[in-house]
Image (cartoon, rainbow, N blue to C red; front, side, top):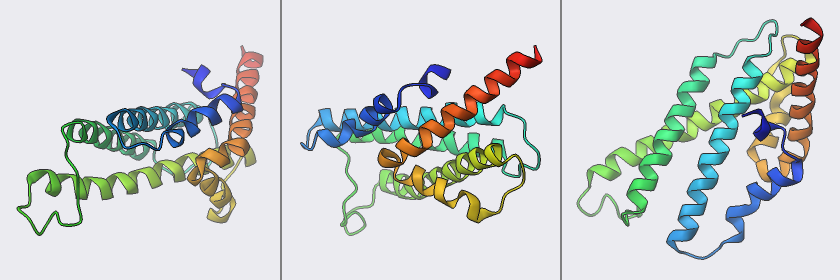
Amino acid sequence: MKKILTLDTWKLFTYLLLPFVFFIESPIESFLTSIWLFGLTFWFFILGYELNSIPTNNFKLAYWCFLTSIIIVFTYLSLTCILFFNDYQITKNAFDEKTEWKDMVMIPLHILTTLSLFYCIIFLSNRIVTIEQKGNIPTKEYIKTFFQFGVITLGIWWLHPRIKRILEKNNSELETQN
């Protein structure tokens, strides 16, 4: 699983640009976008798992909240794949017509998923900066990293080398201890 985190930056960048290459409205585009989102969420999970395994002092964000957020995102993506491949769409007139159970479930779940993704990005940003600076950090210190995750297709050029450096340093420290 660490191979995903140690890919070349250009390969990761190419993967992140993949869904933007296909601008056609078709089931293939929806399928590729779903694969992209599952892959990105899986990358967040692996990154969070690896960064959480590095010991630091004074880290305050809860790992169980991060895992819960990842589960919420995977649940939402799974439901979306099932419903959208059955020609379900949320429209602006969804509540003017007969409100279906899908609307009642998907709209709140979409809001919860958005908040969960924000928590994942905050967790990862805080964790990266905490490991780099080796201590307790104020919020303003990890805002830049947060925005790099927010625009992940461009931010990956700055984030990924930092992540690789952190993981390489941790691996070398583990090897010297053994």
